[in-house]
Length: 174
Ligand SMILES: Cc1cc2nc3c(=O)[nH]c(=O)nc-3n(C[C@H](O)[C@H](O)[C@H](O)COP(=O)(O)O)c2cc1C
View 1: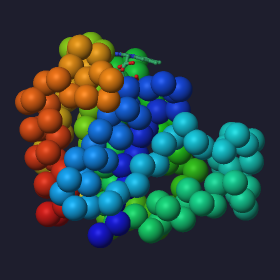
View 2: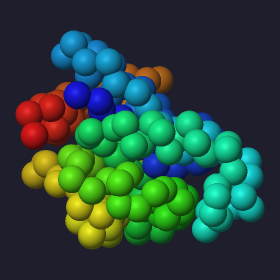
View 3: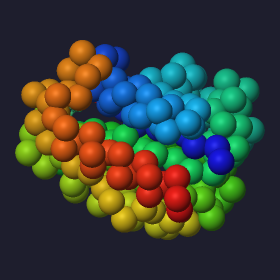
C-alpha cells in the first residue's frame, strides 16, 4: 500500500506542512512509512512550462511519477478565503488524466485559524475528487482555531489527534 500525504499549500512556513509531518509520524507509529508531497516544492517553471503544456517540462516528472504510484492520498487542506488553496487546483489540473486519480482512495483533513476548519474547502475539493474517481473515507476532521491547538510540531488538543487517527485508520482499511 503506497500512501502519500499531500500538503496542499505552497505557503512557506505553513501550519499545513507542520501538521503533515505530525501526521506522517502517526502513520509511522502504525508501522507505515508514508511520504509527504509538499506543494511548496512544485518546480519553479510550473506555470510557464508544466501547466497546460504538452509535453510538460522534465521538472514535473518526479512528482507525476509519485502521484501515479500512489494508491491512497491524504490531503491536508488549509482554509483560504473559504475554500482550498488555488495552487491545489492548479496541481490537479497539471496531472495526467485520468490515470493520476481514477480508482484510487483518499481522505481529507481540514484546518483553519477561524472557526470553520475548512469545512467548505473540503466540500469544494470533494466534488473534484468525486469527478476524478477517488473514493473518500467517511470521516473528515475539521481542525478549527489551529494555531491555539497545534504548535511547535505538537498537538495540544487530544480530541484532534483522536479524529485524525480515525481518518488514518479508515484510509488504511479502505
Ligand atoms: C491566502 C490565505 C487565506 C486565508 N483565508 C482564511 C479563511 O478564509 N478562513 C480562515 O479561518 N483562515 C484563513 N486563513 C488562515 C489559515 O487558515 C491559517 O493560516 C492556517 O494556519 C492554515 O494555513 P497555513 O497552512 O497556510 O498556515 C487564510 C490564510 C491565507 C494565507
